[in-house]
Image (cartoon, rainbow, N blue to C red; front, side, top):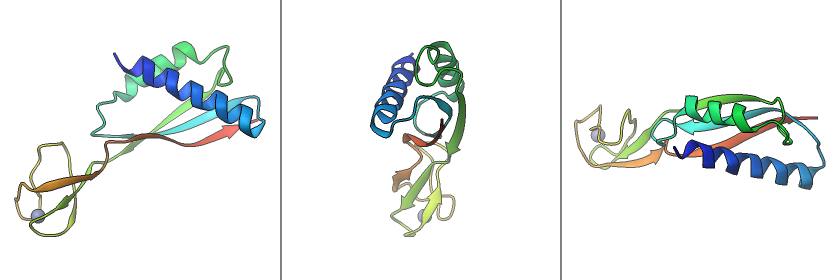
Length: 113
Ligand SMILES: [Zn+2]
């Protein structure tokens, strides 16, 4: 499961931010996860809680904010919601959709001490 390596990556970013910005403890991490990103939020939470201790994020809370999928429809020229990667346009039924959001994972912000 790739959530463990993603979590290790997040903790590395937190350690770097702590060193750069001079805080010693992360209280809360707000993480945005796109619904089309193939990251399982519950697995990620499990991994985070398993390895956060003894790091700058010891005891930190993880808040996961889901980002809905979005796409640009070439046929009707509109930005439309995309529930899954192979969906068609909900407006015109066209299949020429270009993914424009919802496949990303990023740290939105942190609460630190
Ligand atoms: Zn359309």
